[in-house]
Length: 402
Image (cartoon, rainbow, N blue to C red; front, side, top):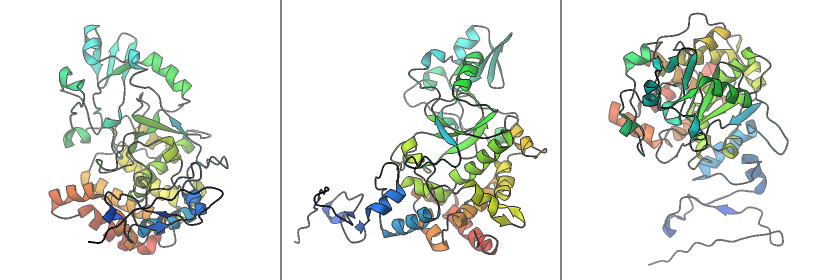
């Protein structure tokens, strides 16, 4: 029997190593093999993570090749060394579940004090309590993903509370809103909004907890009304000169953030939480890139916005963002097949934007085992992958110059 050993070499300034070797997810000594071992120079590591100068988790040479292609095309979201933040993004943690618990009011407490539930607001005379959002309520392009309606109190406040999944009929009702576990006094929330510099009626939120092992997707976020959010439902704010610029940034970022390619890149850095140090070091095209690129004589930015708006402006609570951008026919009725078609095209667009080839995109989609498993259980095939790759080939002539 041949014995195999692993050697960890620590180096310093007196004995530098130019191209150290790396290997990840090696549970046993036998896992350390040529397929997993790769070399990276320090300049490339700094390109991937300029703020922390740490190495992402690359499982093989293929991951490195794709990453090098992407990071040579686009810089990270926020480069702290150069003080560059081209999108003007800020990371907002609004209310911590422990430190802010004195602000929370549950349904039973409010009803006992004479408040009546009106859609998802509790009201009595001139007093209003508005819903507190948690990360579990949202999914990509969907702020009505989960609810606590009809869930008894003993289950609502258990260690791992089970949520209610809204029906298709409820999703198609533009007036439907989910029922949270807690509500907050509107007057106190206005103070919080001002403190967090949230000026508009809608915001982009994403989940903090995005474990890459247990979650189908890592980057989970959506545009939603400016409800208060807890620390597990992060708010990304965008510095803008006016509400139109703000709206365009949110919609465009939503498309990028929700794409499989962006998610794949994030998975090389995220362990369990979407921390600011992780998010800031993900590659993001500049806004001018989307303005300069043209599709059928319109900017790529407007081309994308025209599609994303159909996904997000499907409720009375989000139709305002559509009207700001000139879409007066919102809200749009939730249509599963139409949403699938639009999301498939957006995934393809982002693959072309990031310079991903057909073969690389096929590889990337195979790194989402839970998506694949669910598709196989439901359709008997990895349907998501097939649709995206078919659309990639179909739109090749339209997007090949991106």
